[in-house]
Image (cartoon, rainbow, N blue to C red; front, side, top):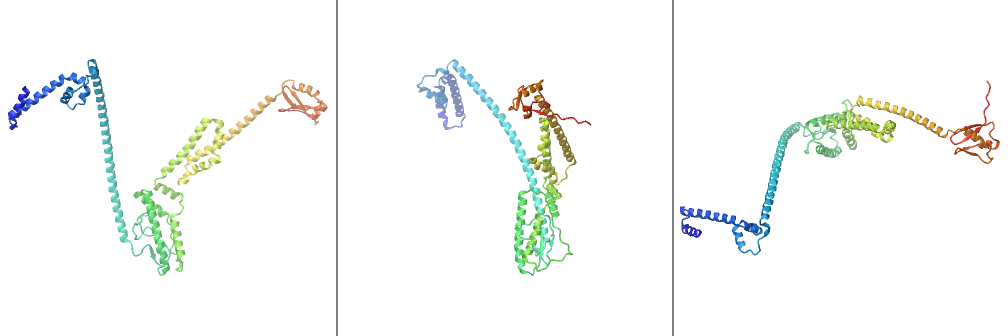
Length: 464
C-alpha cells in the first residue's frame, strides 16, 4: 500500500522532474525497492539452494521468482542441511584454488614483462649500433665517391683502355686500390693498359672485342669478391698490397720494341698470357702467409695444426696406458703404417702449408718419439727371444723321457720283428731305423728328439 502511494505521488510530480519533491520521491522509492529486494533475496536463500539450476538459468532475482511460481519439479534434496555446508566448503576450496592460479598468472605475467623489457632494451641497443654503423658506412661511401670523382677528373678520358703508340709494353696505370673497379661503362683505371699501333685498322676490331671481354671478366670478378667476402678498409688495403706484389715484372726500356708487323692473333695471345700470368700465378709460402693474415685465417690454421698434433699425442698416450708395454710395438707400427702415412705427413708438413716454419719443440718431440720407437723395437726383439727360450724349455720338459726309458727301448728293439719300424714306450711312439730292426742295437748311439728315437753309429775319437 505504501509503495502504491509513493508511485502515485511520483506520477503526479512528473511534470516537473527537476523539483525537489520529485527527486526525493525517486530516491525514497529506490531505497525502499532495494531494501525490499535485499530482504526478499535473504529470505529466499533456501529457495535458491533448493533450485540451483533454475537460479543459474535466470537473468535476475525477479526472473527467478517469476520462474519459481511456474516450476513443476520438486526441490532437490541434495542441497539441504549438511549437503549445503559441504557445497559451501567445496566452493571455498575452488575459490582458493582460483586465487592461487590468479597469483601464479600474475607472477608469470611479471616475468614476461621483465623479459620483454630486457629484449626491448637489447633491440634498442642493436638498432643504435646499426645506426652508428650505417652512419660510418655512409661516410665511407661518400669519401669513396669523392675519390672516384677526383680520379675521373684527373684521368685522360680520350685514352680509353688502350694507349695508341708503336710499342707493346705493359704500363702500370695510376689507381687508388687494386680491387676498386669502375661500375660504369667508361674507363677502368685498375687494369693494365696495352699499347698497340693505331695505324693498323685490322687490330682495332680485335682490340675492341678483347676490351669488352676483359671488362666483363673484371666486373664478374668484382661481383664475386663483393658477394663472397665482406671486406673492410684495412683488408682492402692489405689485398691491394698483396696484388701489387703479384704483378709481373715490367720489361726494361732498353729492350727493343716489337715490330709493327705483329699479327692480331699474336697480340691477343700475348695479352691474354700476361693477364693469365697475373691472375693464376702460383703463390709462395710468403704470399700464402700474407693471404691468410689478410682474410684472418692464420689463427684458424694454427689452431687446426695444434688440434691435430694434440689428438695424435693424446691418442698415443691413452693407447699406451690402456694396452700396456706389450702393445707399444704395435702402436709404433700403426703410427708408421702405410695407411696412416698420408695423415702423418700432412700433420708434419702443416706448418709449411700454412706458410710458417715448424717450431723447434715439435721437431724435438718428433725426434724423441723416434728414439722411443727404436727402444720399443729393441724391447720387442728381446721379448721375442725370451719367448722362444721359454717355449723351447717348455717343449723340452714335455718330451723329456721318463726314467728307464732307454732300457725299455732296448728291450723293445731287441724283440722287434723285421717288418716293424715304430716302438711305443710310455704312451709315446718312437721311429726306429731299419738297420736297428734287422741287426739289433749293438754299437749304436741312441738320441731323442720331439717325437722320434734315432740310432747312429758312434764316431771314433782321433788321437792328437
